[in-house]
Length: 230
Image 1 (spheres, rainbow, N blue to C red):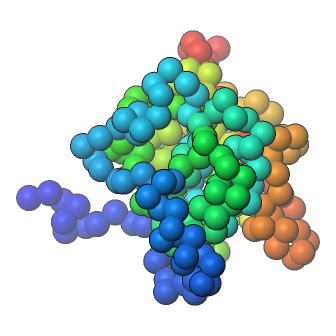
Image 2: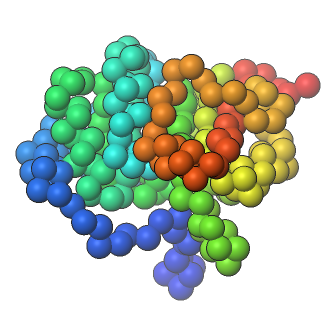
Image 3: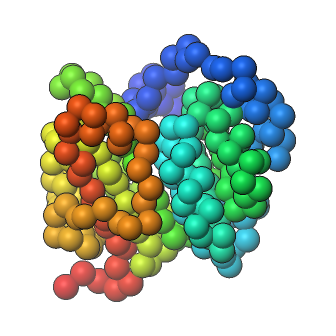
């Protein structure tokens, strides 16, 4: 018997009965046929994207403000957003349509499942993890997505030279990210610690909320080396 049937994996999210606006619901229903890709563990994401063109994956895009701005600024790069919450997906669909974007799609599914089944080894160019759920209580830290197993999975799927860009406004989570990455040891940290914001990363709604609470923003940028680390 599969052990996961007895001990299901710990989720980094909880599907709450989130309030969805009429506009979000209408956008989801109207545009899903155009922008939503099906989750299918028997398929690869490259059944939907060109194999010879760059693909960047964003995990948990919220309402998608930053996601759209990045995609608009880089029309030659394809972007795949992974999100489980319908209101945010609907909001993003409306923005994709309004801006007539051709390089941004969504899979509405747990990111770990998508990475484990639909993304081939050494196939993607980047991963964005902007303001993941901090799971503030210590007893819930096990739900944080940024774990050793997550780093292993991302490292496996990135092409040599690919990157993982992680941002949080929770200091203890940031320090945990840094510690896990150092213990993992396979990524090259471009800043040997936290970095200044990349000029191309727009501010997110979660970031605004954090700054309103006087939270410091912590940024980490890791690269998969082309060769062995020295």
